[in-house]
Image (cartoon, rainbow, N blue to C red; front, side):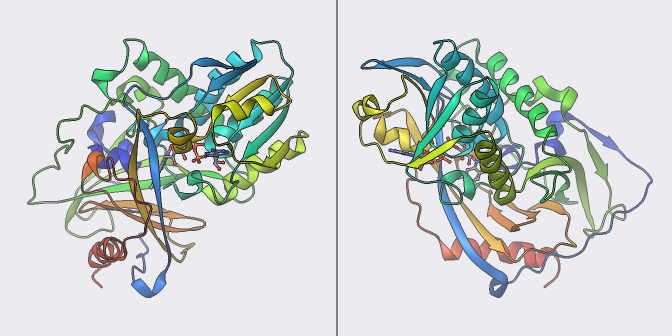
Length: 374
Ligand SMILES: Cc1cc2nc3c(=O)[nH]c(=O)nc-3n(C[C@H](O)[C@H](O)[C@H](O)COP(=O)(O)OP(=O)(O)OC[C@H]3O[C@@H](n4cnc5c(N)ncnc54)[C@H](O)[C@@H]3O)c2cc1C
């Protein structure tokens, strides 16, 4: 299940329950052309994992009020609106109407837009902007409880806080459905299981990652259980459920556009230590540097969780995601993202390398190629 959660296939799995569907229209499954010569890049990035969950407290740095909004592990896009709503409420509580946001990834952009909606003039300061930010290297799935915290390290209020963030984000995403460029869309996801193999087990190697999807079962489509012949993936069981997909290229572009339309300013700037924030003209600052906070705020609690994606040339006719033998392939508008997740949530844990691994990419693409018999 952990691997499925990371793949954004949680809606296909038993957490939300599944229903047997004896009859119905068999959806057309166009094959993915999984070949190395169609791979146009490999991207790698570190998920900013904190055992205690995202940091959202308020700190004084000199005269400045700094509201933290970082450390969302593998759930940064999924929790962005809800987490940023909390950060913005705290920031606006200071009474200031001019805000600085440090960072231009998923959390920085949503913080900036929500602060504008709350009436603030906002300047984003960031070393990079999309598509150079780590957020641009995400899978693009609704995975609100993927590597977001450890059960044993969170306080009693965390599950309710998580639920609030997840629900706020889910409803915010409704506003981006049906727009030009499809920044957000619903895509069917299939989890396949060989008829002979035992169900996959969770492989957390001792770490108790928090899973909270049961709390939002009412907004999570249940999966359909499809026996062989009721789907297009051969002699296997398939579990199918629709899930939100983030077409990160157009979605980031949309967020940046929304920010600029409301008069937002964006300055390229790198900070090396917290004291440098005191040179900013704004008195209130939302700090959203993601994995960058490990260095900037010397936050030793951030653990990198490495993730790699092999990108195949987009196929507009392929409109689904499939999880098969530890590999997920998700068709997005900007490419088919292929990712090895067989190691479960521990895969890449505490691995700070952001170097592409060609062999890993090749093996993942080969797994998808074999699924389609090529
Ligand atoms: C392979 C992979 C797949 C993922 N898939 C998903 C998914 O499907 N769904 C999901 O919800 N999440 C996913 N995630 C997690 C998600 O990508 C992260 O949680 C999210 O990107 C974190 O966003 P952020 O805005 O905090 O950080 P970032 O995107 O890293 O942005 C940080 C910003 O701060 C700036 N910055 C950093 N340091 C400094 C500094 N010192 N001075 C100035 N500026 C600085 C950066 O330039 C950047 O603008 C995935 C992660 C990985 C690695």
